[in-house]
Image (cartoon, rainbow, N blue to C red; front, top):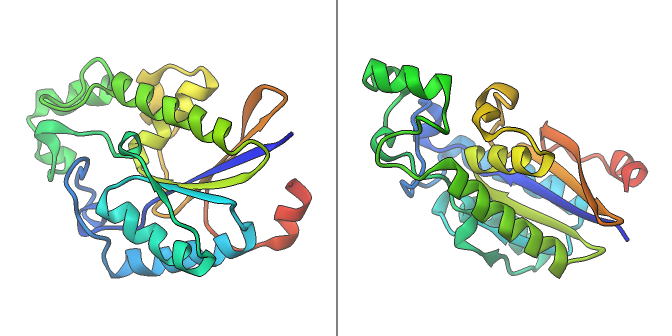
Length: 209
């Protein structure tokens, strides 16, 4: 029995437009983010998920809102899907950080994560836990999860058995509203797609599903 879980990053916020670390700061999506949420809704109408899950952060809830309304589904909010807290880097661009902090983070974003922030391994643990629960609860179904950039990349590394320390190097980009698709089947999970724009394509989905 096949279970498909698609994770979507939320739409853009003002800080993301400026490439500032947003993390635990609860910002709304901006005008571009609203358009991205509408594009994600159009894609979701083709994907036809059986269930919706979402980070409780405002930018994620605003992104999933149009989808929930269009499909008449109530999203399950789970705090384990929130973004990583970036501590002293919140609201700053990496160029605005102390040079020693920025250099250490670039070399190893897990060992030298931002001071005062959440340890990436802890974030990977919580998102991997809820990911397994989603798959178990919705066996044989399609699920759409709206979450966050760094959290999703940590999950990909954890699921594929990659070193968390390499998440920025191996997965350098995940655009706003972009999709990451996992498939559970016969007790194993695999990555089917990463950083895919939410473009409706019923024929493609029919072939893959």
